[in-house]
Image 1 (cartoon, one colour):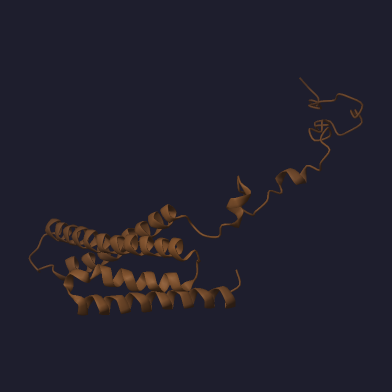
Image 2 (spheres, helix red, strand yellow):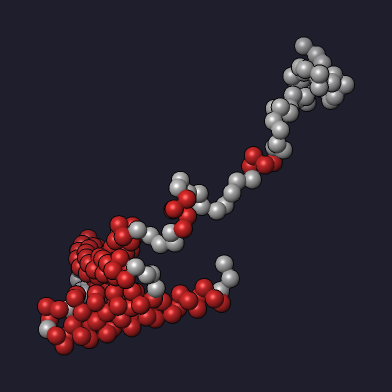
Length: 193
């Protein structure tokens, strides 16, 4: 066998046998009435099934509940596991074997991670419920709902420890949420995305 092999798919009135042998002369986009680049330039804006969905700029109460509870639990678990790792390494004694040290670190990380993850998950659940409830009652979504939900979450979380502890925790929760809302506004205004 000698000579070049011709792989041209000539056909129709556009076939030209004078082209370079081995080049494909068939154009799969010739029948389309749009340029082929438009096929690959996809929109980057979100698409909605119904027009009403495009007007909503907020997560639903169920999405909000899932989001804050999940973020609280996962963040608390990682933070608690880090604290447990530090405590487990610090509690090591000079005569311990590697197996005993590893067991102590794993037990401490798991225990502290579960404890802090559950606490922050509950706080996220309370906050999401209160914020969604305030949005439904006031029929308005603004910073007041967030700050009042932070106040209520702190007070409700520490209510079993007495009124003084609940008031302090409520103030701390309101201040934390207020700082987060103010920080979000500063980032939105001064940091280009």
